[in-house]
Amino acid sequence: MELFILTIDYSGTFVFAISGALAGMKRSFDVFGVFILGLVTAIGGGTLRDLLIGSTPVGWMQNTVYLYIVVAAVAFAYLFRPHFRKLRRSMFLFDTIGIALYTILGLQKALSFGLSPVICVLLGVVSATFGGVIRDVLSGEVPLIFRKEIYASACLAGGVLFLVTDQLIGERAAMGVAIVVVFVIRTLAVRNHWTLAFGTADQS
Image: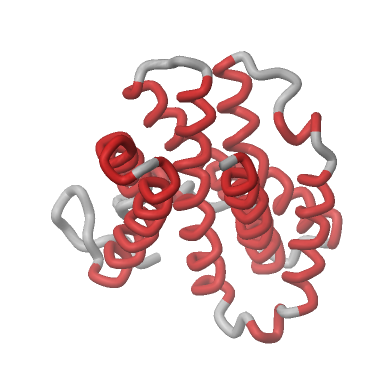
């Protein structure tokens, strides 16, 4: 099970770092700026989660593999940038995969500290969204979590689903189902312009 969770963690780090790197390229940042944006996107949410639950030093400071993954993700984004024909669409894809993975990863880590399920779900949302908040602020965008689009609520739905199904179908299966549900909700919400206000999402 530890290998499964570690795979999710590394995968989330990689896709979030790509999301941040693409945001930096969209703003024509230099190589260092793109790296920093990829780094904070990948580790920002997890760092805040670890600080809140008192897990210090935070995860990426205890395992330099995370930094190597970010470097590899930034290099990947540069090398394959010509294939990302629409940066906005590519950023959406990698960001959506990232929040799906990190919601459940953050929730799992909070559960291991014996916190209440409600707090664990909220910490899952923090893990999933706050790296993106930092990315958007640094790149001069309004953070997605503050827009009308369904974003954090997709993470909430996935977190609650995991708690409900964990004892029914097993931990690993529940994690897989919850990750898919977060991804699907977020994707369908953007595609169909769903919002919590029942209006049309801002397309700017």
